[in-house]
Image (tube, rainbow, N blue to C red; front, side, top):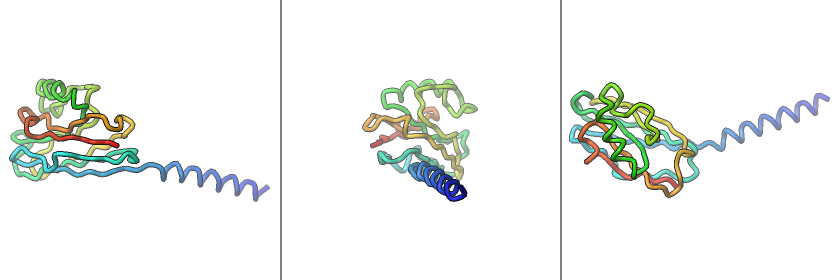
Length: 151
């Protein structure tokens, strides 16, 4: 009886560890500057990633209220609307409209020397879909944007 219990426990432990081993978090770093630019124009994430962890670093010196940046991901077709609604949402809301379903993921707004990280599941994405990342601080999205590719 002890042998059967031990085999059952080992089987459950193996199954649990296999399930956890299947998760793959793909990490991305991106920087924004006081010159309103990201250091990347494109981010590609492999299809076997289950989650994406994006860390935004502000490489400049200016405070968030003067030259803050965030990192926002949406479908490319939704970008303009997200940016427009973000202006009205204000700085206190990281220039993201509360509950905006078009926003797949976003960081908070950071100033010089600060960083923030966001993690999101790739189940929110479609392989080969058209996605863009951008900054919603007013006036920044015209220069601070890029393509996000999954798959």
